[in-house]
Amino acid sequence: MIAGFMAILLACSLAAFAPVSALADPADDAQAAVDDAQATLDAAESRMAEINEEYEQLTAEVERLQQQIDDTAASALEAQQAIRLGIGGRGGVPGWQFSGTSRPGARLEELR
Image (cartoon, rainbow, N blue to C red; front, side, top):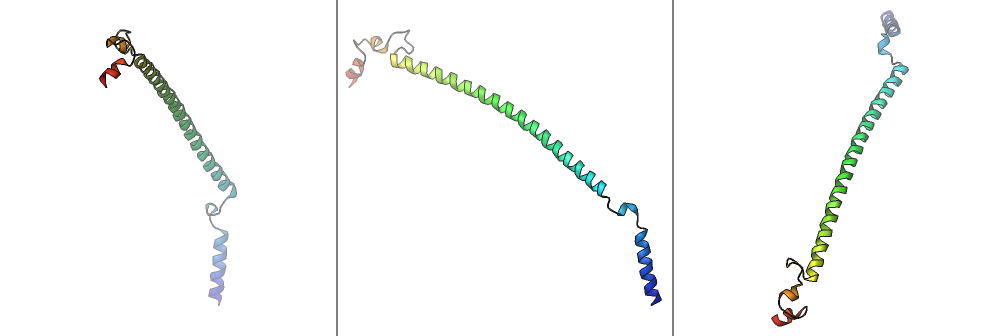
């Protein structure tokens, strides 16, 4: 019985002399949480800057491509208008005059 009492006494006395580093310090835990949060915030801000730069590049590319589309559409409309007028590649002479007919569409009637 005395041995059991001595074992309990020894266990309790050792717990009182536990190393300080083994005990959790709330201030250290709070500082670690703040440090982790700051690192997460820094990473998020860095990624946001990257996303913003990518957005700017994509916006510029969209504007460039839209200008190409607009230029191509304008050229196509000019070509379509020239074809409607029959001036395509004949030095400004309408197609119905170039074919030797007297009026537009006459050549088509001849071919039927």
